[in-house]
Length: 318
Image (tube, rainbow, N blue to C red):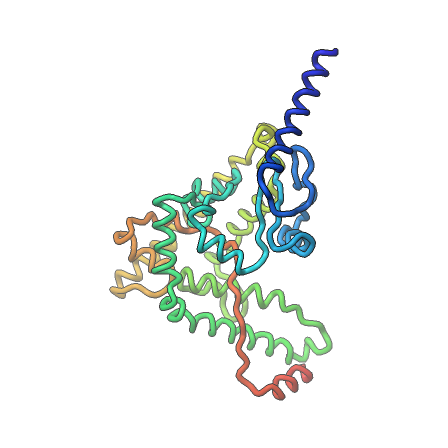
């Protein structure tokens, strides 16, 4: 009994010594105290961004968070995010991929999860010069304005409906609809939702794929950050294979629609799918590899066009 106990104690002491050495050697930003092995995994709330916001208030805009034995540095303001994602992207582009994100991104073939290298440089160049250039975003501005106008009209219509008199109005649905319509029109060049709020079959499939993917990746197990535990938590390979197949079918159908439309019209439109299809030869692109889930929804800001006193009057009347 003495030998196994001494071996266990020695291993524990070595692990603790290694952790202390690493933390003392590098001057890390402040953060919540991690536990051995699991780090801060048990401290993170289900709504992760709120948890990070609370830690930023307690420890400052740069926070050290340990996912298992892996250090994650969280930045919590726009200026720091700009330095990380734009000015120092060469040093900080490589991001840890869980098994699910590796699967969904085809092992880092998209822009969000790509490792720094020739592929990343190419995708970043396409995004900067072609997809998100000031000229293209300005050309797509009428779409954003149109969707925000439609949202405001929908809210006004429901507020003035006699059936809703005295009832509270949830704005969440309207914001979700305007985000969905903005994204689909900017990316695919079409609206999947009609004026009555009914989504067509293709739009329902798109939403289902995104929801299923988000559900599978929303609650990563501890094994994603502690590799030697992964054998206890295998991936749902059959479910993931079906989801991959559904995504590929939807992408192919949308690409075929755009290819046929471009052949008939003889030109391309400003939205992203047409832009990528026309840039395939120029940048040697594999277009399906650029299609990924939106990690951050688009934000629309309404610009008032009426005098302030009319806004106040309309708000009180509603």
